[in-house]
Image (cartoon, rainbow, N blue to C red; front, side, top):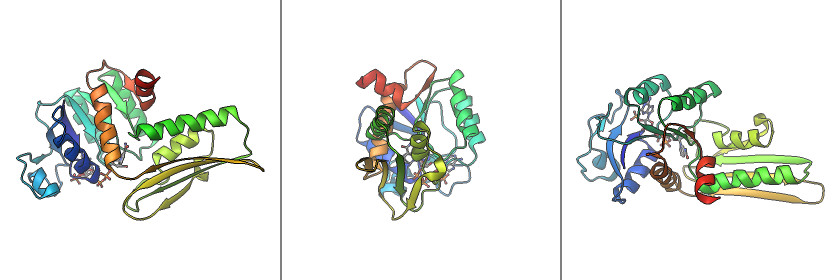
Length: 241
Ligand SMILES: NC(=O)c1ccc[n+]([C@@H]2O[C@H](COP(=O)([O-])OP(=O)(O)OC[C@H]3O[C@@H](n4cnc5c(N)ncnc54)[C@H](OP(=O)(O)O)[C@@H]3O)[C@@H](O)[C@H]2O)c1
């Protein structure tokens, strides 16, 4: 599987490049950055791992790839949409912090080519969301609290995942309790409360590698699928249920 990676100069990009390097069935053929990126033209290996790789950061891909994986931050979304359309290849979109309108624009691309929309690529986290839904529809609680914490450079607050959890449990997103601290790790916690008992379900993300691994596993499952819109729940249903 040959990947064109948007956001290749970032923290998630680095993590995904490292994993791809150790997986013989995967290669990054285009390490994409913005046309005005300070990384443009530099060697990817030298910048990320102090070791020359021969792969250079570029602004536009050549034709040699099967799938776009997008781990870039989402300014200039329109430019990225033009790029996806120009090539019409499968798109695994992992960016977060989109408005509802922007989210729709990405999802609508699935009428032209396969799109997997994955604001959280952790399989375990998506299971947690299913468990929370199950608890909320099966039992009565007087209060449901959603807490999340991420590293202090995370731009979107609350996290897209916390908002998705809130939406699925019919809770106002303004009530999510968010913290931004440190440089690594994150958690999402859902607390179901009654006067005499409490259920807490939580997921701790301990390393970025988790999301990079999740993205590569999704991409392997998805990149040759027919044109459609895919989510983690589509994958969970097909593989695990
Ligand atoms: N789906 C998931 O499970 C998951 C997990 C973790 C993070 N994320 C999301 O992934 C994104 C990146 O996170 P990060 O921690 O790696 O951020 P980061 O370290 O700040 O990196 C951001 C990257 O985006 C690039 N970029 C910005 N605008 C771009 C554009 N218009 N076109 C192409 N590249 C662009 C930057 O490249 P240049 O400045 O060099 O151009 C840089 O490589 C965030 O949205 C984050 O929330 C998703």
